Image 1 (cartoon, rainbow, N blue to C red):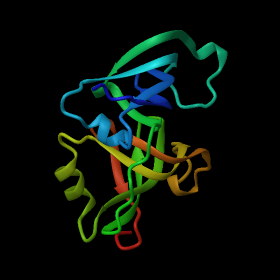
Image 2: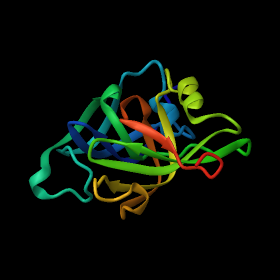
Image 3: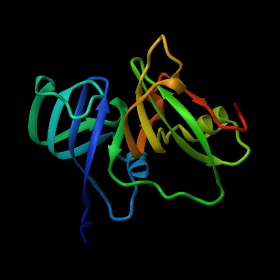
Length: 179
């Protein structure tokens, strides 16, 4: 019997392109789990619109590159994803406020992880082969050398984003218990 997949809108950010389209997930499966599957190395999308790399939303007409019925993106190229389906929050997890750094911008959000574990230990233990992690209550900001990250205005907010930790420039923790 064939599984019917749910078609969910998503934005895929890579260092080369931004792709807006439909991600197809098995029922009740969240984006991070699906992207971490060891039997897949590509993410297929349907009804896709491809734009030049960047982070502004909505993209400008000048950033448009193609509109295609189907595209598949190497998972190793994905920086982060907005859309799809959110991972469940477990009671036994603590919340860490983190910044995820990229060359020209950053994501600020909440990372859920086991209590009393250092961020570096958590990322080392879970990130390979599960590079994709869910951040909650995410804001997008532009890095500015003349302004502290915490004082940078947010360009956009997301309930959640799925981040490929293998492709970030760095991650740091802002939790109150680890200032």
